[in-house]
Length: 257
Image 1 (cartoon, rainbow, N blue to C red):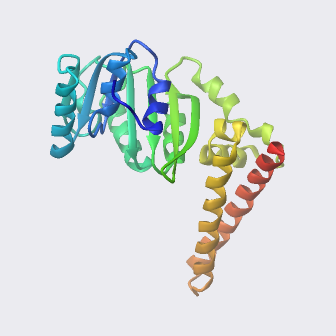
Image 2: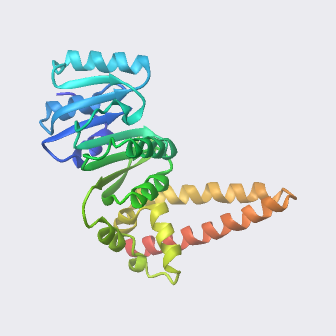
């Protein structure tokens, strides 16, 4: 059986057994090959836009003897899906902005109409993806954060459910943080940092946001050297963000002590 990285293994662990899976931006098709070999998926589609990875994915499927169960298709995003072919869609290894564009276009074209779960791993811009899921009525059932080869990744598992609004309402209720903020402010921070992640805490999450605070402080220092009024406004906004993230980290660190 093919061996996956920890990142791809975590994605695989969220997929409901017995699913028909479409892996978008599949690269070398490692994930769908593993899902078929392990019996998690009953069928799979590997979607890839670029010719090089597409050829590699076809070779991977052939070498694994899965050419009959794994369809490798060339296309942009969810355009590779035709009708009711997938219960689960996975997208990994790209920015949150691009991921949102793929999901939005697929949503508009009805490509997600029969899909029951999404497993998403944006490299950056996780908040963009969470916002899209909220807007479109997907329930964020789970999420995790992990470090591999010096990089930090977040994996989001969303499900289609009739009571998503109620479930998301409870999930994005930030009262557990115990911070004296307006509800809208707390909700925005949960979208930004991850509602499940903030509940579970942990050293990797703290490390990620400590690093983010260092970046924001550097940006503030650069903006302070500018005389433009826009720079001053931006600096004030970032300083407010720094304070809020710092308060959340203090809560997490206190909980871990």
